[in-house]
Amino acid sequence: MIRYLRLYGYFLRFSFSRAMEFRLDFFFRIVMDAVWYVVQFSFFWVLYRHTALLGGWTFDQVMVFMGGVFVVDALHMTVFSNNMWWFPIYVNKGDLDYHLVRPVSPLFVMSVRDFAANSFVNLLMAVAVLTWTLARYPAPLGAGPVAVYVVSLLVGTFLYYVLHMLFLIPAFWMHTSHGLREIYFVLGETMTRPVGIFTGWVRSVLVSILPFGVIVSFPAKSLFEGASPGPLLHMAAVTAAAFLAMVGMWRWGLRSYVSASS
Amino acid sequence: MRLELLWHIVSVEARRRMTYRADFWIGSVAGIVVKFAVAAFIVGAIFRESGAGRIGGFTYQEMLLYYVTVVLMGLFVQTSEREQSVSQEIYEGGLTRHLLYPVSYGTMKYAQQIAAAVPALIQATLLTVWVPWAVGIPEGLTWGSAARGLAALAAANMLHFLLTYPVQLVAFWADNVWSLLVMHRFASALLGGMLVPLALFPEGARRVLELLPFRYLYAFPVEAFLGRVPPRDWAAGMVLSAAWCGVFTLIGRAVWRRGMLEYTGVGI
Image 1 (spheres, each protein chain N blue to C red):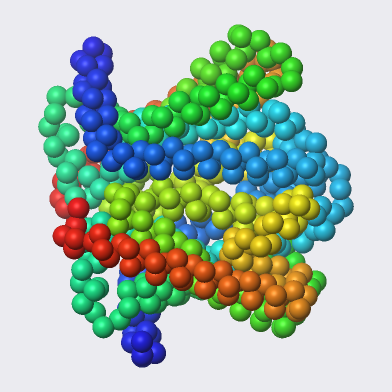
Image 2 (image 1 turned 30 degrees about the vertical axis):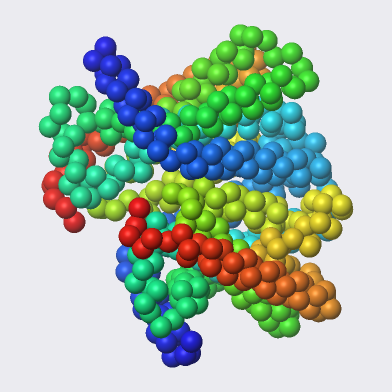
């Protein structure tokens, strides 16, 4: 474990020094995320001019929910996203070989090697937005439930990463996962909407087989609805199942890896 | 530029885009379906929870038709949005070979964008087939409104190119303009009526949005197609859209001239 933490420390150092080479991009990315936050808040503001509730939530509740979405997205962008971008390319070109011969888990290296230092400022910004949405919430939420909300958002981020990997691992067989990646990003949109708007079998799918509807909606549901541990237990079970599926697929994929460029 | 040459560029580019067929269909078709499904659930939730029969002048079915049309028409507007080929060529020095060609760079890139509409046309045609059964036929749709909508769509395709072209040219000075293009996508989705019909905005905001170029990317072609824009307003809208095309052509030319003074032709 200590060895992995030390290794991660080196990854961080390299990532920050690389990010400093592209300072203008650093600035653009901050503005880009700020624009995304404004667009998302404006979108809901416009909708709530015509309804008091959406998916069973008030505007103030959706603001807190969106604060959670921004934190999960920023964490994913900072810790995992760059690695997810490169992974299919490594498989396709045979560059995964270099990581397979190293004395650490290739899944760990493939997932967290490239820390996006230029997204780190966005993460701070997302945390500030979440804090603001919690502070402006009209009813007292309590420190305990807020702490549970924050921790479950971290679990949600992990689930978001696991789902991303599940959509990329087929690159071992398909040699390109461009199409699946597109589907992942589009399905990711469902994470940014309260799960309560979905009905019928679509909702069932979004909280079980493709649990994008769990990532932020369930922590928010638990925050607003109080003591019931149901949503969080469900989230933990879904995350564990998805993680096991990812590890299984990864091992299966490695057995199919032919180590040849294509 | 000769029409024959333009057609040749379009034809080559269209074939290139259809090369990875399975991948192309998996990604794009699923993308369209999910985008529409999310929009449909939001519309359903608003009507269900507000109890209103009409919102922003739309019935439930009309708003669904708006969203399905905006998703399908959006395919023709954003054809090559994510590719950033202009900024990539500037960054890597690939622009150099284009400077030797007897064709203006901007025209060539626009021809490539038109080519990118070919796969979009196939997708849209196949996906449009189920619309009358699933969502219904728009009441205001006539041959005339369809023609006006398609003309506005052609203008929207050009306006989109002209809007993003100067942004991509920022690559003459910056290492990465991807974030700027994404910013443009976010802003135009909201202000152009892709995320939510402009009729749902407050009156004051709507008046401002009608003057901005974003409306002419999505909302205007869709509303014209669905027969929600009277011919007189359509003509005024087309004039405004053409005016914005002119403005962004001038901006693109100015940025190109300044950028060429910076360009070293060796890549970065």
